[in-house]
Image (cartoon, rainbow, N blue to C red; front, side, top):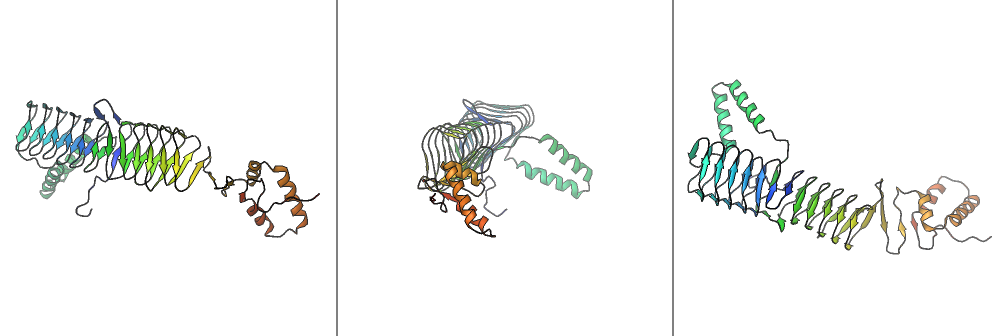
Length: 355
């Protein structure tokens, strides 16, 4: 990884994440990048926050909780195992730790703290660094079996099936909006409150988003998802899957939507607008004259039936075939003749015939 790069390069919301009245709730870990703001409480397995992160509510960690220096929590912090607090961390409520407490200098806990394990006042070493140094020393003295046991125990204790919630650096999360300068990815079966602002947005299936989606790039919405607001992109493409409901307007450069999608407001596209038919991958696009432009996947017979001139078209085609000699290029010319249909119900090769 190059120097200066940020591994938290995406807003990631895993499957089943919900935003309740005052909490962000998930089964997995919660990882918050430095200098971010989360205006409500969080509940997850492990809670990890970088420098100068602000929480507007409480923290409930089923396992460990790590708050880096200058972080601020307005309410209580409840930890199921061990807690690590860096320098000058502020906790507006009470700190309750079931395991060990590793605490840095000048930490302010307004309502006191309680820990059932060891309490060490220092600047805690990052856990990954401690594990690496410990395993390195075991291998150096030849205790390979002991190193394997320690490593296997760590993997067993930290095995969590759910993906983590990841909030990138400088992100802002509240009931009103989720604002990040990175791409955003939302899993399935989520319930979120607030307008989502990101570089690009990918929404999974069966979600309820009580807000709008706005991105500079592409926006994709999965099946059976309801967006209680607008879907807007500046320079990208919007894709709406089957049974999607947008209770607002859609504005984009290109728009691709399933015929089962519902948009309550206005659809605006400065570029291409196409519809996907149910059960197929065909796209139907309207041309400027009101005719129908047929893609190569369509059947030529279907193209004739749409014009309402089935009998005229078939008689003309038979007469033309009878007069012309069959050659290798005749079939290709006949197929090309139906490539575009006009409002008069005739293809480019068709013309009225005299009796």
